[in-house]
Length: 133
Image 1 (tube, rainbow, N blue to C red):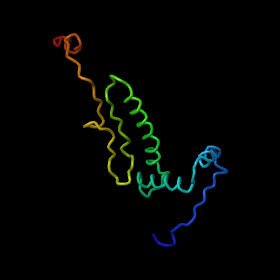
Image 2 (tube, one colour):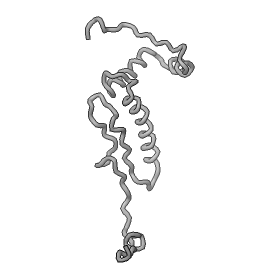
Image 3 (cartoon, helix red, strand yellow):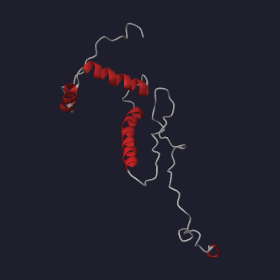
Image 4 (tube, rainbow, N blue to C red):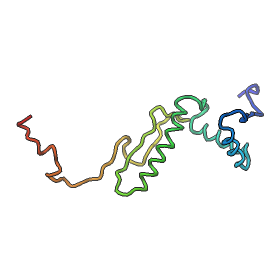
């Protein structure tokens, strides 16, 4: 980076934004606003590289990932529920442009179903008379 693009100070005007009260509450909850914002920026660089975070694919990834994580958390707390792999959007960018590993399952995009013993009464297709087709 050359000296012309090197910034010493960046201002953030929140007074006229529609969610000013929420932003002020967040700022007031920080022990050091500069460190907090720097931490957020470093996290975004790690996740998405040096891209504009308002880009559509990044915004989509930011809003889909928390929902997928919450669903995994809810499902992991339930008993006798099949394991579900919730993939992120294929367009979800990363800083390294590599696909993100979604779950510990050996295959993605599949729903694991518990094995159930086969019973001839449960096989609805086996009861079809193929001569009538």
